[in-house]
Length: 431
Image 1 (cartoon, rainbow, N blue to C red):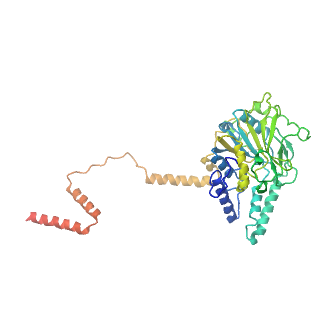
Image 2: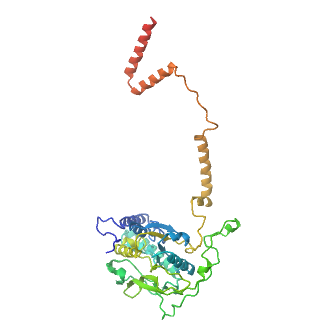
Image 3: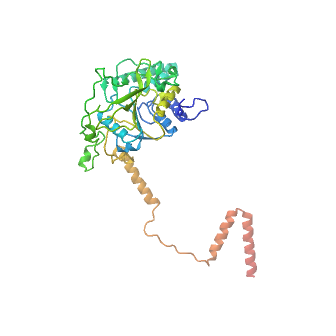
């Protein structure tokens, strides 16, 4: 059994225990509200398609977990990258070139690439179909049908493609594997798994006419998708994309080795490790680095990790990353992950709110009111003055102090007795 596997005992609260509670709260909250979060590949713990549970598994295994939204030199500090692709298209030549350069820059690094061909929203509606009251069955079926239609519409443009790392084969029916084979299948009960497969990411087959060698990577000359061209007019320096000398390197100049990690009874590859067998100039060796390709996130996203056997399978993935170190989850935005050869100087910060209407208008007025409040309440206007010291021979201050002490005793009878004694003494002295 994997050392990073979830403890299945009722009292067990080891690796992944907190992740299970997060998922349970997610399902209960979504069920009560009737609305669910479906954003894919983000570390937020509210989405059925999120990666909060997986990142928690990494963290409890001893890894230092963080998030990044682009390929940039900042990733040199990471030893493991986890990339949940939000696009159905495979990684671009520039992205693959950056990753291979990153693998060559360290020792025993890992990239975990998870294909997009799964939607946890459909799985969610399947799970709660028998949990909702009879009067909500029709609405549940309607939402599940709408989710299926939207998912199929998004993936229908996917075509068979050959890349340096794998061949994309979207054809074929979607099915749930009944049997599994490979190193990751040990100790896994396939009948209890909740995984599915349709689009296969398979090793290139030289005998297959579809698996032709990839053409040389094109030169990248356009501006990065996240950069506003208006920055040039303001005189701000633009970060360069991946240098052309890297992007122009033709692919397939070095041989790759493909090791299946998890296969189904039909021979389809669910997960595999891509390593470099031989290195030819100008490629650098990967230094025992690997690209671990997973066909889809059916057992890795939040909704999938609610299943115990799925968690055991995810623990196999974490074990394949080696000793605990720094792991970065890559979160794709619209248009995928951009590639930069220099880090951006305009990192996201709180000042971005001043660019959004009407928040900028509201925040501006709140700031003005806050300044006026501070001016009226706190500052000392002018130079501070030295207050005059009171006379130490003023007997009236002594009387005041005695009165304050008597007030603190809250003994009225004792105070009146002292006052009466004082007047009696004064009367005798007057005589």
